[in-house]
Length: 325
Image 1 (cartoon, rainbow, N blue to C red):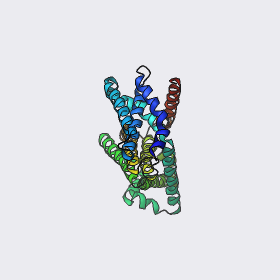
Image 2 (cartoon, helix red, strand yellow; image 1 turned 30 degrees about the vertical axis):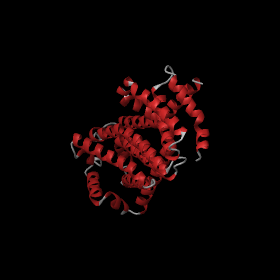
Image 3 (cartoon, rainbow, N blue to C red; image 1 turned 90 degrees about the horizontal axis):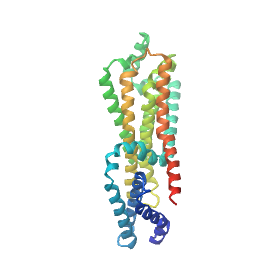
Image 4 (cartoon, one colour; image 1 turned 135 degrees about the vertical axis):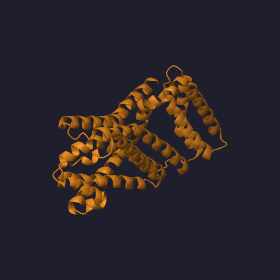
């Protein structure tokens, strides 16, 4: 892009940023953060293509001004952990709803494929889950406790083991995005096919409800967050395939940073899922209403935090932005 076109495209936004930075009373922490990120991106682009121009000098001064205000706000930095999860991340994640939907559709498609394959070929389940697991589960079913696998380890060991493994899967789904998103699709496919064949196996044994009400106590959050980690990997993949006005390297760097934020947001949810699997899922004697309540609450939490809340915050943000004009 020519420098004149770059300036024309972004001039009004820069002037607005300047005005906001000078307006101490109305500038909110999330606005300040968004300004600093966007100006820094524009500065990186300008340094790459117009290193000695007046545009680069101007943007450098604008970025320095934003930077100074960011790090001068000590009170906000002390509460950064809280504001990241309650304001910064949900507002940021509003921009990645399409990638989240795509990740969900990929997972749903391969889950259906896994169930269909298991229904078509009874050896498929063994090839996916392994003979040892299938034989153990069949023995548990024969002994009248189909979900006994969740009772074999101690609560704490299972909690720690499952949480660490889930975080590992999440990081893998994200990092495999560097293969233009194909690696992420593969990780989603692996987990989805396993889930689909797993659920069909219990359906074939006449235990679909028994398995669903037990497994989804922890699985609602666990599977949802794997899909969200897949979204992070797709964000990285998109940054490689569709760099837009940025160089591919600048776009990739930005994509990795955005994807990493998404992955970081999943860690508390994986801890919750690990706790549920380690301490709650094993309580197979709990009444159906309680299991349904836990599953429903888990689903509501995920839908609110990753879909509804970002839309609510974005709407408020737009209203506040309009009020400053």
